[in-house]
Image (cartoon, rainbow, N blue to C red; front, side, top):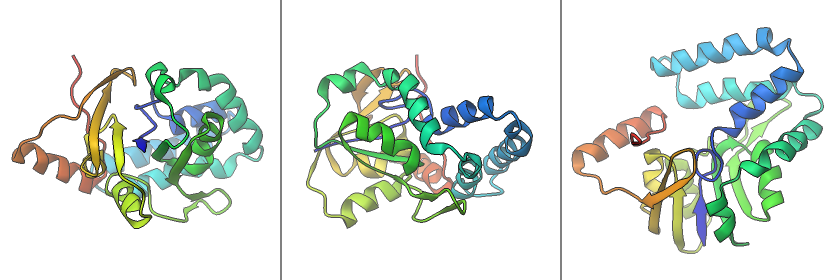
Length: 211
């Protein structure tokens, strides 16, 4: 079984932010009712005033304002499915598993189109709350262990924050250059591992600097 992160890994960019802007272009009022609060949450999270989970909940809250969500998400993927990385499509298997911190209501439609399994952050669009933990970093590894999945042959991610899950795989791969380049997961000394752990605990993605 191969396991993949989604955003920045097999899809360039962040599909939640992409879909958010998709919706705001169709509902200009959201630039005033939602966007300033989202920016404030990003700033507070960066300053350590709120957790990554709290920031993500604020971001995901735009989903509560989309009354025709089912229509819009399909239209979004109609336009953006072509961005799925060619290297992934060439090796896609039916038993692939996508694990993503993005909302399940956004990841689900594209996973079904691809014909693969998925698990993402479970978010209630009616009440604007998580119904399970944010599927981020250690939570991905915990999900795999708790649900007794078979051995992971290969794991792919664009972020070192996913090191806990990379350690669960026979082989881990780092994806860079906007989801286009796949290399081996880097070896990390104790100092680097300590920095990664600190970043994981504070809830931020960690990326290697690209050439």
